[in-house]
View 1: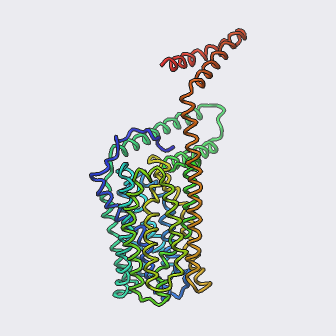
View 2 (view 1 turned 90 degrees about the vertical axis):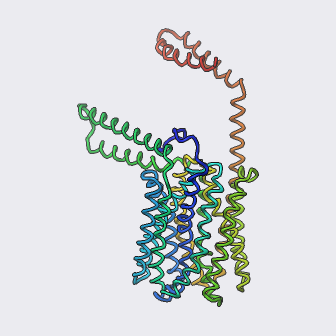
View 3 (view 1 turned 90 degrees about the horizontal axis):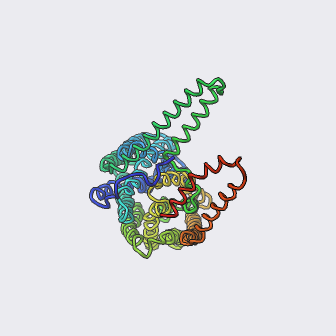
Length: 509
């Protein structure tokens, strides 16, 4: 089982100090994890022509990368719990560099799926989760602001990568560009080195897990010894299989808290986000190709991503400050739901933008909506499940989201291949996100109502003295009746003597 919430830890997160250095490291790691799969879309038109593939086939590169980044969430969470954030992020940066350098020598689209999609995506996954977890360990009161600043790494990187990728392609081609990008991604190793362990809290958790492991080991040794000495023991093979299954489940539960699937707020968040990601990434991946499709030159098309990213840079920290205010913080789930619906509305209106000026306006509003969603994506989850269960929650959420993340862009590519027009892809994404935002708004309203009712009933039960008096009178009457039933219940009365004294002691206090 995961460590309980009342485990002895450091008195409180620092909320500053070295935490701001950690925020900078997370800024770099999260920036590459989110921006790189979108920025690489600059090369899709040329890769499509080079290999002679369709829109849907070439978009699988980004889809596999994004799905791997999200789907490896539980593995990343387990590695963080086992080894800490610093080595995991540094190893992830090394994988990113290896994947992109290998992609420079690919001779087929399938090889790009493996090198860029899977290997680089795996490295980005090992950068994303630990960065978010480290911010949760270093910040509490200022956590929304810290999350907003760290999440701003995504638009900053996108704003830089979009024109940089176009320049690299014009100068070195897509193969030479991949070599240089592989070297740039090695900076994730430097960012990971900044993730200094917070120390006492982590150490105490590891100590408890170690003690529990030792206690379980002693118990298993004792059971094995009793089994061997017993003349009527079960077959050893069956017993060993049962023990192995039990041990495997216990080890998994140490790192992933599956009891979260009984948490009402967590399930609402999970369903809404799985639906949202079906239309979340496709518009930003197809924005530059769409601009090229209607006759806009390459650098102007890449500049649309820079405009989106510049607005995103401002939107994320601003959203973090607003979400941290006393008016929004108690009902941050409503603000998150509105952001998703606003995002979808922008996509529904995108087909009306048939000129470059119209696409600039769309990019501005899209950047605002995109930044609002990303700034609150993890903060709303931590608001629901708490910091103690956040690591497990992130892992479980990301693996559930990876399916729709994987399918979203290829479905958009199929619509483009079928109808020969991008507007159907934007309409599909807009409808899905409006539906997701509406679902989250309604279900969060229901969840808040139920929580308020449960809290009211709990307080009423604690404040009502009649309930306590009725329970005490019931115990006394039951014990009085047992004294009149004869000597055969004498052992039962002796067993109730201890609990009776304890109850009286509590009532007197």
